[in-house]
Image (tube, rainbow, N blue to C red):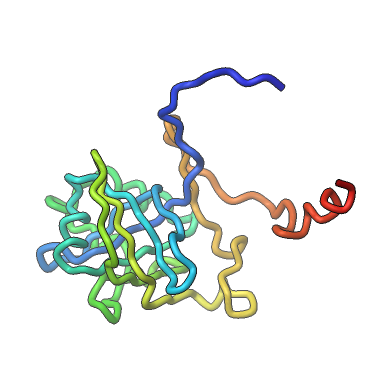
Amino acid sequence: MSQVRIDPQVHLPMPVVLVGAMVEGRANFMPAGWVCRANYTPPMLAVGIGHGKWTAKGIREAGAFSVNVPAAAQVEAVDYCGIVTGRKTDKGRMFAFQAGDLGAPVATGCPLALECRLHDVLELPSNFLFVGEITGAWAEESILRDGSPDPQKLDPLFLTMPDNTYWKLGPALAKAWACGKALKERL
């Protein structure tokens, strides 16, 4: 298999979450694909949000935010939240929510919701990278297996760019830190 050079503006498939923040006294939710676990202990997430986004303003002011994992069936509401601005639209009405322990709006209408205390902000050329410590987690019982979210039951969304397409999670492929053991033995 040969490789060819491509444009370095490459986007990997990304999980889609709703980032929640209180902005000027209102709950606001925006979809974000630039999100990942950033630390094990204490548990931390990192999420990239554009400088001009209203949600970024709320995170910086409140020092707290939520990362909510919508189910694939919620794709229409998630996409809507990405095409309207919270400056002019009350996006808090799109998802049932409650105030988390830190005051961030936690989307109880999503199967999994995490509240984060802002730990650090890295200002990049076009985005802020918000790093938050996960201080609270809530899940619908129906998505849990042995007390943890089951990826198949969670049924999360993924985004690919530049084709701007939403995807669903496929079937499990192999067990991590296990499927390579046979190869390790052969080498």
